[in-house]
Image (tube, rainbow, N blue to C red; front, side, top):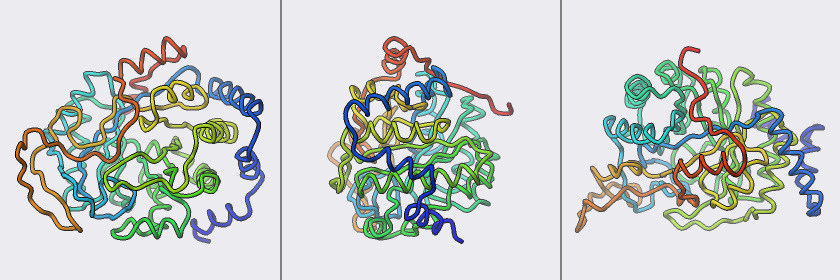
Length: 374
């Protein structure tokens, strides 16, 4: 039976753990939610201690051949596009390293002309050897196992791939062009990454595209499966909520703050040893309130456009309109920056986030937790 069929079956006829997870998503009283939050905090402390792993996304390119209605990088959006050269990538990373980061997520739209194997390998090797970054993860278009192996050999330790929505009709409606249209190819990516030797694998759903309880159950079914088959890798789950972006796509099903808390608790109570990732998509006050509930890893001081940390995202600017490149003449090119993937909500610096972790929550910001070769 194909993996995608296993997921469909698990959603339709869940086993004991997934049934329990589903029950934790049912409406509950404030008192019950408080009790679950307390248990979630206790479980997080038991399995992960006071450590909070900090990372930063580093965007290489906003070029993309996919048309995804909700994404700022969607190929039909008339946006300013840039791909950083390797020296610009190194400059971005030196800026992040000066702020303390030793855990970097390289992000790019899916475009084989601009973001291909040799370019990625060189970026990874230079970040590892010249800047001394031990923890490099990738969030790129899905690849074959054979294409991942050189990236692992170059020094990439992690791969992140979000299914976006697990609801097949919604997926087909939102992904109208490009290789991302293939639901099953994307769904199987975690297993190909595991076979390639990635040390860490991250999955997630983008909440706001379909009913949040369906997405949560499907995500849990996906996680339960890869916990069995990807046993050599450390697994993390992200629960991002849709944010404003170019194209002005509006959420179809909103996950409220209260339901978001309930979902976090359900994940932690059902999967006590799985890492949970908190992004700067969420506003500062909410992040401060929810981070002790189950999160083990969070981003800080993020930019979601190429060159955003150092202002280098200018270079060869052009618009893409209906899939075609069009050079653009701007009155003041020096102030035109590449378009971001989405708007972040927490604009605090890494130092401010670190202080909140230590002073308000008694947590330890972890900038680096391993070295290459260990």
